[in-house]
Amino acid sequence: KQCGNSHTGSFKDLGMTVLVSQVNHVIKKQGGIKAVGCASTGDTSAALAAYCAAAGIPSIVFLPADKISLAQLVQPIANGSIVVSLDTDFDGCMKLIQEVVEEYPIYLANSMNSLRLEGQKTVSIEVAQQFDWEVPDWIVVPGGNLGNVYAFYKGFKMMKDLGLTTRMPRLVVAQAHNANPLYSAYKNSWNFQPMVAERTLASAIQIGDPVSVHRAIRALKACDGVVGEATEEELMDVGARADRTGMFNCPHTGVALAVLEKLRNDGTIGANDRTVVVSTAHGLKFTDSKIAYHERKLHQAKGNHANTVIRIPAQSDRVIDELRKRVEL
Image (cartoon, rainbow, N blue to C red; front, side, top):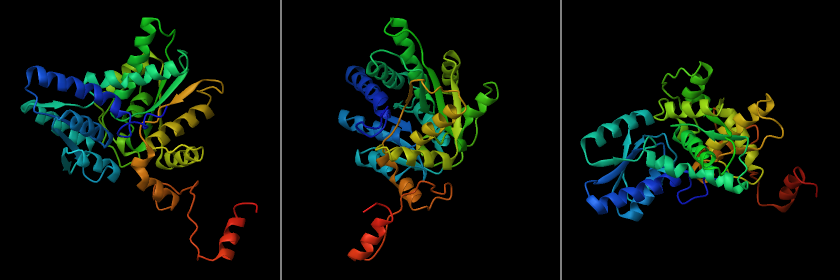
């Protein structure tokens, strides 16, 4: 499910357009809100900046310094946000923005806000509609702050309650091994303990203390859900293989695909089970890691499926020699 083919290149647009629309309505009706703010690992800030710019509302974004891609960083800058780069991780940014909005008339736009979830749950409705209202067996989604997990559950539950569908899918949350607090809780009878997330190429889910963890756990319990993890090498290798099919995946989709492969291999997901993987962002936001992978410059991954550029002199005989190594001419 390609949620990255959207205005700012990630599924965060779905929730943010709802939130900013409602904030715009409140400002016009009663005032009081001076700006909208968020902490972000990149995609949330891009969505907030774009929709606030369209509405003429000031936006403020707190970003962890040197932990998001340049493509993600330039989006809120270009859209006119007040961009604050902080020497901390996402969890530190989240704590700071919560302190600020408690004292000043700044509206918090992170996924703990139910308006965001109302927009994000539309992915569930789109999936059901695209399958002629037949619910798939499994939904696999990358998990960071975990608001999307609860939102997807909420959407499918709403459709079942309304009689549009007859059953619930099983949810799978895919986490990077370096930032896997939900996976650790899943393996420990759902006993959640926050962690300090280590650096991962799937930077948007590099979160050790997700704000929606308890809602996510409730959703997973309700639909007999599963949590899996993927190493840096696994997420990059599977993402590279998927790109060979014509897709252009973000690293977070690589996490989801790697977990899908593991669950298929161990028999959790059957050969005939209809399974939807949610691709949360466009690969063009993460070209640095893709280039480094194909140049075999990542210390976290060997580049087992790297497609290296052929660098040779501009001579026809040399060109033909190299082509013959790769194509039957």
